[in-house]
Amino acid sequence: MAQKFSQEKATAAAAFFLKLRGGRMSYLKLIKLLYLADRLALDRWGFSITTDRYVSMDQGPMVSNIYDLITQDQEQKSFWSRFISPPLGEWEVQLKSDNLPENQLSRAEEKLLQEIFGTYGTWNRWKLRDFTHDLPEWQNPYGTSIPIQISEILKVQGASDEDIDGVIKDLNAAESANNLLGSRT
Image 1 (cartoon, rainbow, N blue to C red):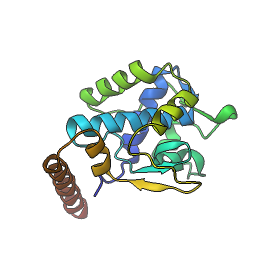
Image 2 (cartoon, rainbow, N blue to C red):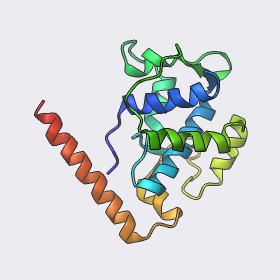
Image 3 (cartoon, rainbow, N blue to C red):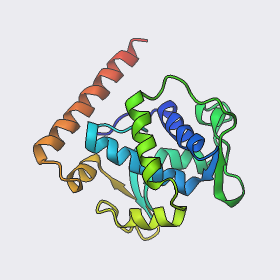
């Protein structure tokens, strides 16, 4: 099981990267940075920042729900559309204002996003794409998409079966708690 997708968390992480980049970037690059951030967060903490699910696509591993938010027509009232533009020329997105979503990211998450941007932020989208093609969890989908399980990401990063089972149990417990609390409101 994965975390339940939070459009608010995903938007905050994307907006944070966009702000670091000056407000605008290729959405392929943005998707790659978000994937790499989640990959590192899973390795360090056992949970992701964006709460997205992952798939192998022709352009490499992707954050699936975020890709859909960018590329598909979204209702104008969505949280994402309040902060981030639809695709512009050259397949870019940009912040709609300098105001970022508040109270979505912890300081540790912001620090990790800054770390990822410090390492990969100067790379262009094609270098990032090529780099992510070399990640061991990516499989060539030949024009379709193949799900990437959190357990696969953890395994290729060297986590033991016991650690992977613990992460999955923790994610399942958190999801169950969220469902229980959500049903009471």
